[in-house]
Image (cartoon, rainbow, N blue to C red; front, top):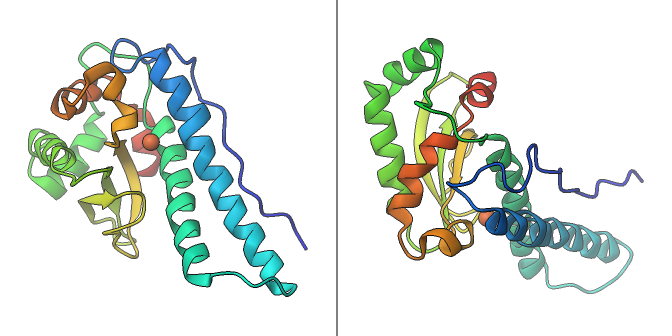
Length: 195
Ligand SMILES: [Fe+2]
């Protein structure tokens, strides 16, 4: 059987590259500890499922829950790292991306406001995501934890992690300032490739 184990990708920049918006300390912990734990959790669930096919008794409900939580956590973090880049002065999308955002949200400013407000109002731990369906329609959604409130058929294009581990050391409980500052490090070239 082929080995389908998941692996964490290295960050596409240095740990200090997103300062002062996100500190080196946060990136080290977030990537090497938190993200790595989701990869390990997903692989552990897959391993238990493999063993169950050979006769091991497992709690399917718990293993399926762990697989969903950890694998979605891994995939969202892989995208999150790609979605960011070192701080840019007057960071903005290209005209092409702005046109797409205008078509879907009325204006770039309206899109930014909706994404920021959706992020601020995620209940507890979770994500805010710009998603696209196969027709090209864009929507902004909240994701609780890594896997709840998902909408089938939509794929994430731009995500921001609003778990406390992504901002607490720099911003304490001020998620709103993290969300506002974060626009300076969005990698619009990366978004354009997938939008
Ligand atoms: Fe995270």
